[in-house]
Image (cartoon, rainbow, N blue to C red; front, side, top):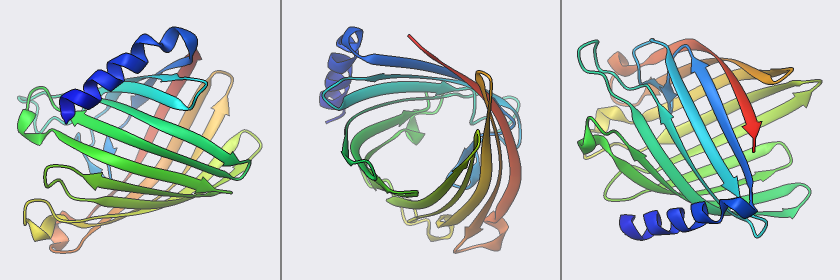
Length: 215
């Protein structure tokens, strides 16, 4: 199945000359995945590229210098997605995506998901169906736009992985995005509440700056 979706991704990539294309570079004080730090509080750099066709299909890829367990074991995250998006009306948006996340230095941690996402007014719902026994995840969000800023709140929850029942939990975040000239500044607080063990609870503050360019 992975090879099929990879071929689809490459097919849409080949059509990108007829699409809207964007690339974004970012510098982050940490990498947070569903309420958990991936880089032990250390800075990361990342890049994203995306292609959107007029018929609603899109594809993209990203890379981030994150996920180091310690200073002697560097790692990176590389991923891709392909999907279809549709604006039902001015207040309702929906998309269905295939997402692959890979760790070249630790392939045992690779995982793939199907994502269903929609927004209604300022509310958003994401549901990720994990493949090959990877746990499911859902997230609720709310955003409020004012001036050149966006205030957002999120709540997410995921199941345990491979019967490690103390690894699942809920995460919360509150943050703000500020657009200044061609840059976006993001500042947010996150909190993770483990269901099985208080030792896995985590929280912190993350700052990032990014720049997006269309081509």
